[in-house]
Image (cartoon, rainbow, N blue to C red):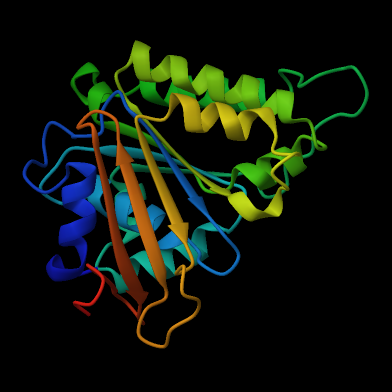
Length: 251
């Protein structure tokens, strides 16, 4: 994503002026998208920014949606090599695609569930130099698939998110999540979905245009930044290895 395309998004997120300390430290960022308008490019952009060569940020990526090779391929197009970042201990990838949670009333056991995952995250952060704790980002690529891994138990997901939120207080790190808004009916939205909207310091919504589909615009982004008491809205167009963000009528 080049400088031009990222300006509006970075300005809305507060990433336009400083690299260190990490501007999102201690904050919760919730990204919501829809089937017609994927918000994954926002996740990719935040991942790239968190691994900027001019920073000492560390990213813990929890993948329920895609394998490492998928994200490495995308980030290479954006000018970021995840393999080298992983080798330099700046990128930790937790592949959860095969996570199976127990049935019945056993809950998530320490041997093979979300508590074990939380313990692994906590151990990873604790092993870092203390000076790096405030520059850690925890990214979860798909909350809805996390719910699937928990056999449909939104309570397990909510508990895990609460655990992760305690890390933003304990280590002053950031928590970034992606969820798909329109796979739930307005009456059946799980508790963790509503809770994430409530606790998020920054809420990013990727939505279709109100006027319908357009060839030169793929959707609109609404960024609600509670810290700045500001709401930003602009359009975006996804290209091969760049996403252009612009105000309506200025494509």
